[in-house]
Length: 210
Length: 153
Image (cartoon, rainbow over all chains, first blue to last red; front, side):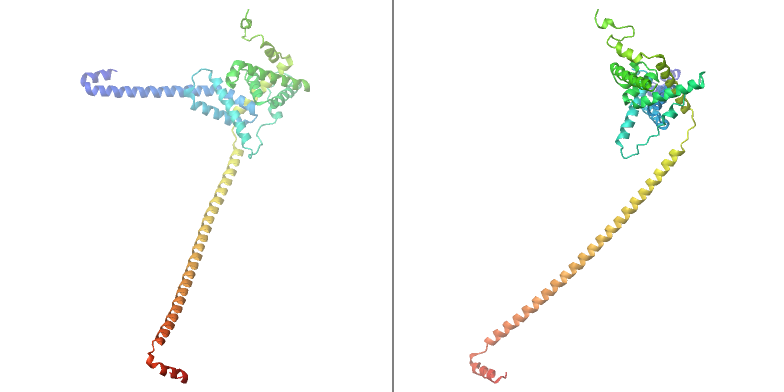
């Protein structure tokens, strides 16, 4: 600013041009800074929410490669639309909504591409239920827990797409009903209905096999 | 008290309570199972996130596809080129045949014209002969008859 003042005192006409140029330069600097801030903010969001998005997609698809691909696509899409994110919902809810839509699109496209092989890379239920933290329980308890987890996987596999999404968001991601409603685009009442049906089915299958 | 006033602390209406009870009314064992399930998914996801990335199968898959794509592309290009050449050859043959047919037709037409011209010449000569014969003077008529009778000219 001091430089600008000096220029104004020296030559008024040339000084006005320089002031304008300085203003444009300042605006450019400000825009560059805003972009940098947005980029930093977005990388923080990725760092913070990537594990959750990946976990949800992994539990939905039981396919490591697919979950990774969809997670990448989710953040790519989020990055493209980061400017339009107004913060009306939390970043996590917004990202989860993108992830759910991507997953839906994936299955829809797969159904449409009937000439493609229908084989998926989903791991079998035994493998999925292997991952249980040992904790302090005995080997027998561990075995029982694994068996029960396998049964839950089996039940989840049999749920409809919507029921499965709601169930996983509630019991794996521990989201509130309002958050689930926002992420899925359903009303809270519908979420409750899907959740209750899903839980009833899982309970029934668990109870039946006990 | 209105229906909305009956909302509980958690914001749910009395009509929604049974649904929530159905959802949340979990016995200890079921709750423990869900907890195990959650822990299992978290552990699996955590391990998957930190696993070393192996893309060998994917690369092989892609390279196979790439090779198949190239092969198919080559076949298509070769087919296109040979098809084009065949088509060109076929067209040249057609042009040659058409030219030969045209030449034959022209030759035939020429011959017909020549034939026609020949016939017309003969007719003309005959007409001339007959005209000439009629032009014999009447004074020479007896002599002409004699020449015919004698067989001399």
